[in-house]
Amino acid sequence: QQQVKQSPQSLIVQKGGISIINCAYENTAFDYFPWYQQFPGKGPALLIAIRPDVSEKKEGRFTISFNKSAKQFSLHIMDSQPGDSATYFCAASITGANNLFFGTGTRLTVIP
Amino acid sequence: DVKVTQSSRYLVKRTGEKVFLECVQDMDHENMFWYRQDPGLGLRLIYFSYDVKMKEKGDIPEGYSVSREKKERFSLILESASTNQTSMYLCASIPQESRANVLTFGAGSRLTVL
Image 1 (cartoon, rainbow over the protein chains, first blue to last red):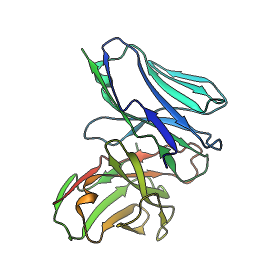
Image 2: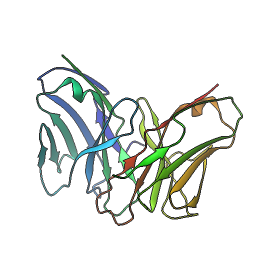
Image 3: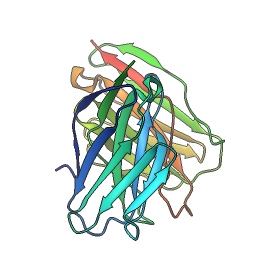
Image 4: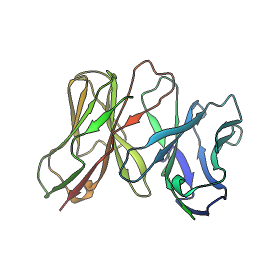
């Protein structure tokens, strides 16, 4: 059973556009929601993360929006660039636990 | 920076062979993990270890075993490789005291079983 559901599976965006990736979860005990970015030939690396005490977190062109009542969170990439082309994974975990539950990944392609 | 090194980036093995995937981290992290990455399925946890000689099953342990004889090294073992184990394998580590579960991943080992 997938603990974190992610969509879309793939996304193509024009340079300068906004990329939006959505995730949903069921376990209300989750209290940490990171996004990982993976370039071809590399392992995933932490991009940005949020805790449920805030509804939004922004770091540069990357923003996480969090809706606790709907149990959903999303990644917005503003002014998308070809260098943003990568696979993005959302995840959820419980602080202190040994595991993260990952979404199925979104392959983003930003075309010039 | 924490470094997680997976020594074999690409392997091709035959069905029935025994396969060892090695992972070494250099930051004295207690917790280490093995994930499998497949298109459309994301990252699935195979095994993790929170201390030397300790191991816990993840979501998909069948067909795999692990070994952690030293703190810095975590090995994934396929006793008898099968074609459905063709995949990308990712090792990761995290310190025990981390409040935020920020995993540091290796670059991956792509295994093809013929």
